[in-house]
Length: 252
Length: 252
Image (tube, rainbow over the protein chains, first blue to last red):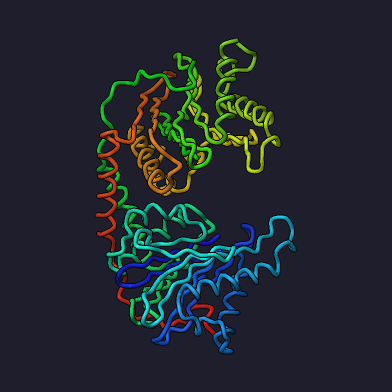
């Protein structure tokens, strides 16, 4: 499994991904799921990937090849971010199509992506690209997108992420969301990669890699656990009600 | 969808359930998913249900009928809690079997349950009963069980629930977990039912029903949101690292 997320805030874009891949519980490896393209001051793209590793690697390879050989369609050639999302979705469908229906029961070549970036002169944005190749764009009302094992880490994003928050704070929130997910699901694992992209630069932002034993990650984890416990302990107590006399449904 | 959970702590058992059922987004109703049986000072059972509503209602009806008619197998007759779980699992399979394969594509008669309770002279316990009828028992290491839409509300349980915590605190934690889930998924909805069962009584415990506009639920919700924001704001800032020079994988 995988957990990746991206957020768009006024200051820029935030990307985060775990690095665990597994084909069965006894075949666990570490692969980066964060892929950067260009970043030359004119345009930059960051792609987060989830799903079949062979598919996602094939897609990344083709995106790079198309840039290298100056293809008609490539991340270097598209004029809009939505065009980039459509291009990536199309390549993803092609790569999945090469293998679908060929494997054993349970084989699934599906892959999902989050594509974000900025083309000079246009606002930055993030897109979620489904296995079918179609895609959605994040908005001011929904400033974050998730792929993979997204549920455990969603409540904290729902509560904290807003468009006007500082990019650094969004990064911290993403790390907390990632850490909560790792705690609840063993198929999501370190290192955590974080990319902090400042709008208007079109250059690679701060790229942080936090391993399992990273000092900051450990400090954050302990502080968050402590804070949550304290917050919980300070919650108002249940009201002193008499035992309810209402019969529970299902009682005849 | 549904979200139900139960916890076993030293002081007793805790049950919580939402009340929303839906068959498509335009057919949403409110049904209790918490069912109490007996509670006569000798034995008590609480059943939480998720899945196909026709199946779960049929199961509850049969459990009540078997008690009424003094059947050879019934919740009134079983000697052990595990025997009760096996009996409920068997009835669930039978009821599902009556309708499986008959519906349109996407029809699914599956149901899952959490069964908890106490029989005089034996320790209280909680079981999760799968659609296949098999079941697992909670343990000191895993003191809580969840059915339905369980992921959003799991991180807080993972962090807070321990066997030695007060039953009242477990109830508060269950309400927070339920509230986080309602916030992230519209198919889980109020009222929230909570049952606090004190070990050794074999009598109905405190039964609390919290509607959408319940004062306590609203206070708790605001307090938790506030506390989480404060806790988040106090987390250690990201270390001041230079922009990483490591190229992201996927770059050639």
